[in-house]
Image (cartoon, rainbow over all chains, first blue to last red; front, side, top):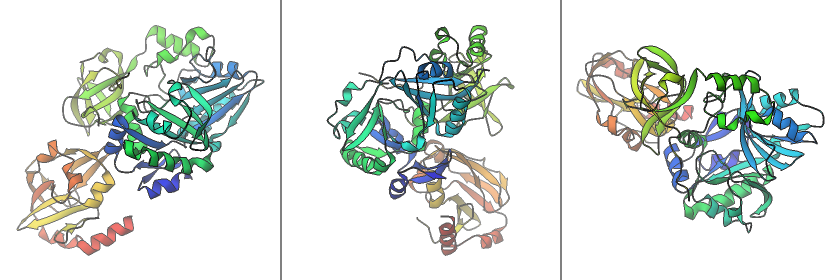
Amino acid sequence: MKKTPLYEQHVNLGGKIVEFAGWALPVQYSGILEEHDHVRNYAGLFDVSHMGEILIEGSAAEKFIQHLVTNDISNMKEGKVIYSPMCYPDGGTVDDILVYKFSNIKYLLVVNASNTEKDYQWMLSNSMDNVIITNITDNYAQLALQGPKALGILKSLTNFPLENIKPFRFEEKVDISGVEALVSRTGYTGEDGFEIYISPEYAATLWNKILEKGKKEKLIPAGLGARDTLRFEASMPLYGQEISKDITPVEAGLTRFIKFEKGDFIGRAALLSKKDSGTRRTLAGFEMIERGIPRSHYDVVSSYKNIGFVTSGNFSPTLKKNIGMALIDNEYANVSKEIDIVIRNKAVKAKIMELPFYSRKRG
Amino acid sequence: MKIKEELKYSKEHEWVKVTGDKAYIGITDFAQKALGDIVFVELPEVGTELSAGDTFGVIESVKAASDIYCPVSGTITKINEDLNDQPESINEDSYVAWIIEVELSNPSELDELMNEDEYENFCSKEG
């Protein structure tokens, strides 16, 4: 197992270490529910150094990424971040990624840890002239400071006017407590917050400083468990669950991140035909009516007929309900429609609910 | 880690508290800590007959669902219905939050279970 530069910190903080995508990371420290609650109401600090970073440079960088991903990067300003699926020719999903634009000839792609090597090889195999693709995952440690108190906490460690970094924007060379960082207003929790990219050698120093400064704002370290329940409530897709090589972004409800009008890109024809003809199945949210917790891969049935499967499910700490997302036949995906989730060979009643389950109050 | 000396322990981290010909069964402090925040308990029905080693229910934490095993043979005489609404009481004190009561059909099985010292030793090896 690979260790992030913060491994010692996790152990010292009592983190329960598990293997995730080849990395030794804490699934929790004080407890998933407590960590979840702190991120929703105060702030949580996550080590997300396992995320992959791939640098795209060269005069054809923009053209290459336009071809590679489904979203349109042509109108991106420098300092902007966009989210995009990346697809195979058949429309199946290679990964969902963030694209950071430094300039027309330099972009950073942030990819899922479990997909880093696969994505890198995929990019190389689709490369073109005047593009340099470099896997620089090991050059970065990444911290995610998330929650309503994130801005205030991070501001107390820098003179930089962080409030000027709007959502899905980033700044380079921000001095945070003497450490040079790339800071973006992004996250995977449904809350306001920042993702902070730094050189691995400064990771422990910065981690400790943020935790210390944030203490009075009730900041606590948070692990992979809370990261999953938080993203799940915000109905953000997780690769391997809501999207995969067998699940297109159209089915997963991500069509708004596919820009068919931008010109050709990998998977365009397949995705367009799925969008026009209508997909057979679609991602829907549901809540349990009867007792039981839905889990990923459980079957979904209606009148004894299999209509799909659960992609993610759990007890929702914020809503205090047992909820899930499922990929099901279209005709069953209307709000309030009753379906059954098969839990340990028993059909347990649920009803379709609008997504997202949770969105934070803004302003 | 808390361990109660008057109890018997299984390798699957259940405890057994014998009172006459009946026994209360729950999970240990070690087990609740390993599971994390418990959010659901699926209880069996009173009257169910169990052999030692049978699963009789499921405990779900935020992380995962885990079977609960009955370390002794017998018939279920009571279930702790409070766990339907307060599954987290197992996290709060797993030795108070019993799960089922069984009437023992083969009390000699109790001899195969661990005492406090043996269980403590067993847990230290499991980490």
